[in-house]
Length: 405
Image (cartoon, rainbow, N blue to C red):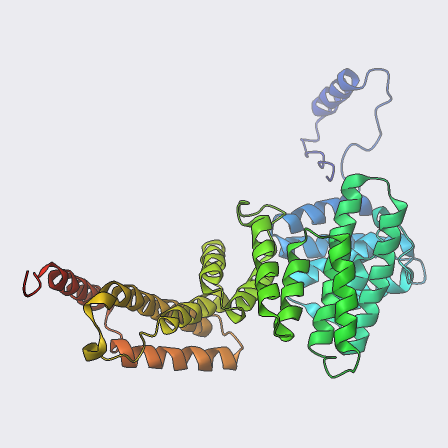
């Protein structure tokens, strides 16, 4: 943490004497420094202050402070030495937080130039982290991303074998598994056309499961591979095992996968026809962030699939029997909820200027289908009243005595 800057008192001699007496009490026998105030902060102090601001979601305030520190670490000819690594990485991370990926990549590239093999320790700003970021920020993707991931993987493997610290080793193992999963994702997307894509995925996921068998991300990636191979039962087991690891942990716990990872998880659960589990994940996501367009969209789609699976959509009233009354009520509730989730997604889409036309088109298509089944959306008060009437009508019908009894 950065040292507190001395407060500015009045310039009178009385104040100076008081300050001297105070220092004599705190540091008996020590000479009083000639400069008590106004001394410039060191690069290390500025970096500590900037890092604290970043951790408390004040990236705008953190950036100029980190840049001041970086400027102090420039050599006389205007270049950086390895001493600037912590500042370069911090400035890059702040720019990421501010949404400026291009600038972040430039700073990470400068860090990679100063520490090309990741041999400088993390405490001095080196290590694998910059390579892992560059893999994700690569403009080219494909093989370029893989090469950056592989640089980070080599460093992490060395870190794991060289440390005896149990906690640190576990942390590095988890990070290594995540990097291996990152390479797998590339071979399942950008490089899926390569002849060795499937075999690469198999070897990578094998290593990931060996180094971190309790990693939710590794299990999730294993499920993704198995779905692509149409080995659905194996995929379902991997997904269930992944959720079991973190489902009872509170929000904010480091054992809970990051938000985007859980959004991807919900998609995989839906692909594996585990809609109930997917809704549990999605309900938790919108509790944590109710502005996520994708989470609301996926929840609406999932509820739609649940109703569709029960074969209720487009079944006319005359086809329904008394035995299906309860199922019909549940399905109608799911359809109404589906529309609510999808409408929330579309409202946020417009509000946030979201950029995913395929998501928008599909959400609008689903809402159109739901309106055809349920009727057009009413004003909020009217809709609540109509729903109450429907429920009351259903209850009254259930209360009517059957003929012959």
